[in-house]
Length: 383
Ligand SMILES: Nc1ncnc2c1ncn2[C@@H]1O[C@H](COP(=O)(O)OP(=O)(O)OP(=O)(O)O)[C@@H](O)[C@H]1O
Ligand SMILES: [Mg+2]
Image (cartoon, rainbow, N blue to C red; front, side, top):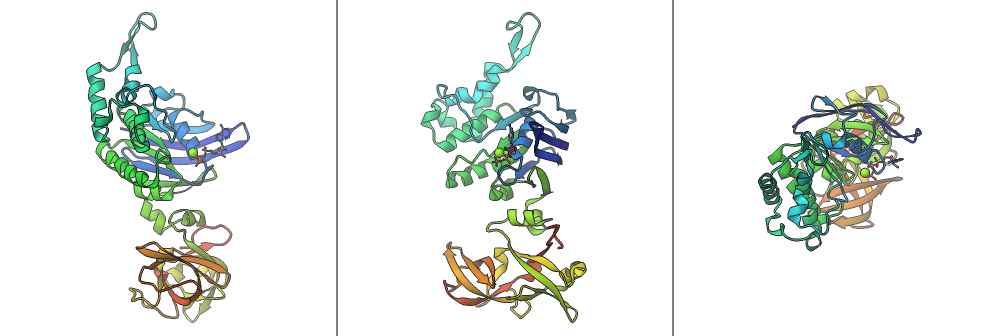
C-alpha cells in the first residue's frame, strides 16, 4: 500500500494551456480519494500524471516514499481503470483478467527475449484470477467472451483485471459512466465494498457529485485546474469554503440570493427585497464585517419547509418567506418544488405531505441555522 502526494503539480499543454494549476494534495495510504469537478477542470490530466501517462510540466508526484516523476508507468505499481475499458473480444473473461499477469516478466541475464522469465506461475495466475472473479461475482462467466456479458459485467472484468495485479494504488477515471442508472448504483456499492476489503489506496475521478459524496473517504473539488477544497463529504456539504463548492456539492444545488445585511436592534437581517430573514446570533457575529453590505445568501433545498406542515423548526417572522409555486415534481419520498420570491428562483425539497401546487402562494420556513453567506466579490464563505 502507499500514499500518493502531489506537490505544486502543474500541467501546461502546448506551452499555453494550463490544465492543472499548482495543485497540492496528500492522499493517505488506504484512502479512497475522489477528484470531482465539472468537465474540463483537469481531473483526467491529474490522474494521468499520477499514472505516468502524461508528462509533468512542474512539481512532484510521490507514491509511497518514492518520487515517481521519471518512473515509467509500468514501474509505478498502479493499476488504472478507465471509462472506456477495452477488453480483448476474442479472449475469454478468464484470459482477459489474467492477461496482464501473463505479460509480467523479470529479466534474468542472456539475450532478450530469452533473458526474461515469467513473474507469475500458472498456478499463481489461476489463484488470483479465481479470487478476483469470486470477489466481483464473475465465477460463472469465466469461460464467456466479453460480447456475451452485460455492460456491468464487462466493467467488472475490467476491475478484476486491475485487482489481480495487486497494485499499490488504483486510479479510476469515471469507471461507471457507461453503465445505466441502476447498475451504476449497484457497481458503486460493489466498489465501496471492494475498497473496504482490499484497502488499496484509490484515486477516483468523476464529475458526478453523488458518486463523490457516497464513495469518497475524502473529496477534492476542482475547478479550472485549481483545487477548491479538500475534505470529508459531509464537511464539504456543511462547510463549503466558497460559492463554487457550495453550488457543486448537493443535489439539487444550494439556492443563492443576493441580500443586504441590515442591522435592526441587536439583530442582523438578510434583506432580499421580497423577503427578510433574521440571522441566528452566532452567525450574525461571524458576519459583523459585512453590516450594511450586499452579500450572497445560501440555503439548501432540504432546509426549506412547507409552513403548513408540522415542523421541527418553529415558524416566525424571522425565518419565513412567502413564495409563488412555479413547478412541483413529486418524487414519492419528497416533492421538489420550484418557486419564486421577487426575482429569485428557489428550489425546495418539501415533505411529500405538502399540498403545494402550481400557482399557489404559500409560506415556507427556512432553517436559518443551516444558512450560508458568501462574499459577493471574492465568493468566499463568510460562514
Ligand atoms: N492532450 C491535450 N492537449 C491539449 N489540451 C488538453 C489535452 N488533454 C486535455 N486538454 C485540456 O485540458 C483541460 C482538462 O482536461 P481533462 O481531460 O483533464 O478534463 P476532465 O476534468 O477530465 O474533464 P471531463 O470531466 O470532461 O473528463 C481541458 O480543457 C482539455 O481540453
Ligand atoms: Mg476526464
